[in-house]
Amino acid sequence: MAGISVRTLHHYDHIGLLKPSSRTEAGYRQYNQQDLLRLQQILFYKELDVPLQEIGSILDDPDFDPVATLHSHKRRLQARANRLTRLLKTIDKTLHKLAEDDTMKDEDLYAGFTPEQAERYDREAKEMWGAETVEASKKRLRKMSKAQWQAIGAEGDAVTRGLAEWVGHDVGETAVQHLIARHYTWLSHFFQPSAEAYRGMSQMYATHPEFRAFYENFAPGLADFMQAAMTYYADHTLRD
View 1 (cartoon, helix red, strand yellow):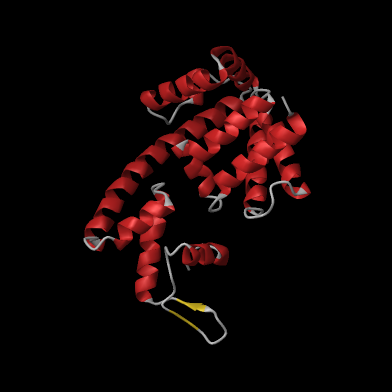
View 2: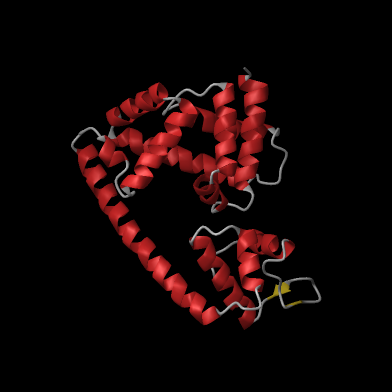
């Protein structure tokens, strides 16, 4: 009904975020109307990129007002919908340019984001990787064709979804490291990270709020799992 997996429900139960009201004799979880309303609130807050631990604290607050909260969700989701509309227009514009074998401009790469966000992303990237590396990456992006954009985007999504299936396993397992090797190759389309740079990227996935929220949406714990798996790959395959 909610479009989430049994595995996610088990995780929510384990961390105390959403416990079933009862269980059958066979041990199956049973959720009542109140549980479903709590799950709805959880999904709303997840959509707004609120961390799971913070969601639990909000919902368990004695002063929590579900009606006022729903009004707040509505306002914030409407703002997000407006932003997504702008992003969709940007995608249409980009597809049109790529269909004409046109090149991307810097403003196209950041379209859909506010000027402040674009400036911050550019600044953070230069602080971490250096201005020369960032400019070289932009130059590569400007030259990519429509087919290349689509193939690279599909590969990045496939690798992320593949890794999400292995959360909780040993990061040194062959299957995990095979996916991480694909991730490293995918990242190399944008710049060629050294072992040190790859470790730095793994730290960003786990600590940067926006990166973390992105990966946690695929599977709870994925951001930390990727950090550990990428670090293992850097230490055992890339090396300094």
